[in-house]
Length: 211
Length: 211
DNA sequence: AAATGGTTTAAACATTTGTTTAAAAATAAC
DNA sequence: GTTATTTTTAAACAAATGTTTAAACCATTT
Image: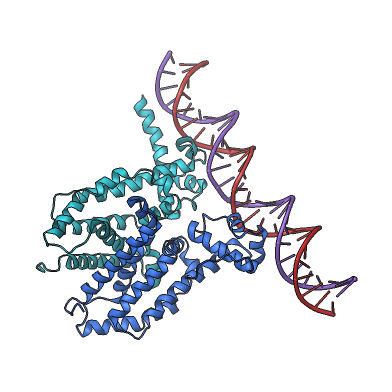
C-alpha cells in the first residue's frame, strides 16, 4: 500500500519539480514566481509548498541536482583509464553533448553561484579532492616526461571548458548577431567544438606527430 | 570602464544611475528592487521614478550604456591599423583590463540578453556591419596568404573572448573551488590571460617564427 | 457504510513589489 | 521679498509575491 501511495505522490511531486527545473533554468531564481511553476506543472499553487515547503527549498534541491549531475559527469571522464589526449577530447565531446541538451545550464549555474555562493556551494571539499585525482596526476606526468606542453590542470580545465561553454553562455547573443535559427546555431557550435579540439590538441602536443 | 565614484556633490539623477548600475550588475534586473537602488543611492524611493519614469526604463538605459561601451571599446581595437598578431594580443589585453575592472559585466550582459533579447538588442545591424570591417578582412587576407591558419572571424572572435571572459563568468565558482581571495584570483586570471595569448598565437601562427 | 489519511483545492494571508500622490522644502526668477 | 519652478519627502496605492488555511476530495481500510 505504501508503494502505491508513494507512486501517486511522486507523480505530482515529480511534475512540479520538473516544471520548476525548466523554469528556473530559463529565468533563474529571482525571475521565477511560485505561480509560474504551478502554471507550468498545471497544478494548484499550494502544492509547491505542500511538497517542498518553500520556493527556496525547491530551488536548492534542483540546483544541487543539476550541479551534482554536471560535476559527476565531468569527474567520471577525469577518472577514465585512457590516454590524456583521448581523455581531453572525450571531455570536450561530452561537455558539448550536455550543453546541446541543456544550453542554459552553465549560465544558470554561474549566475546562481554568483548570487548566493555561500548557500549553494557549502561543501566543495569532496569535489576538490576528486579534482586533484587521476587527471591532474596524468597531466603532471605527461608534462614531466615532455610529452605535453607545460601547463597545470587548474588552467587547462577552465581553458577547455570555458572556450566551449562560452558559446552556449552567449547563445542568444550569438543567434541575434548572426540571425541564425536553432539548427544553424547547433551547426556553428559543432564547428566551434571541433575547432577547440584542434586548437587544444595541437597546442598541447605540438612536438608530437600530427596523425 | 569608469570606476564607480559616489560623489556627494553629484546630481541626484547621476547618483541614482550609478548606484543602480552597481546593483544591477551584481544582482541582475529581476533580483534588484527599487528600494535596493534608493537605499544604495541614499535617496528617497520616489526619485527613481521622478528621474527615470520606471525601474525598467532605468535598467534599459544602464544596459545600453554598458553594452555600447563594451562593444565600442572592442570595435575600436578591431579597427586599429596594426598587424593581426599585435591586434589579437591587444584585444585580449584590453578585454582583460575591462573584465578586471568589472568582473560581473559579461555574466550580467549574457544573462539579461538571454532573459529579454528582443527588448535589449533591438538593433544590431550597425554593430554587425562594423563587425565585418577591418579585422574580418585582415583575417581573410592573412589566411589567404598562408600567414595564418585557416579560421573565420566568426569563430576566432568568440574563441578568444570566450576563453578569457569565462574565467570571470565563473569567478565566484573559481574562488570557492580554490579557496582564493580577490588578489589571488587576479593573479590566477593574469596567468590565464597569458596562457591564452600563448595558445592563440602559437596555434594561429604555427609555421611562423616564435619571435 | 463509516472512518482514516494522504492529496488537492479555492480562498485568504501578510509582505513586498513598483509606482503615484500631494504636500513640503529648496532653488530660481522676478 | 514675493512668486514661480524644481526637487525632495512621507505616505499611500494597487498589484504581485510567497505562503498558509481549512474545507473538499479520493482511495483504502475497517
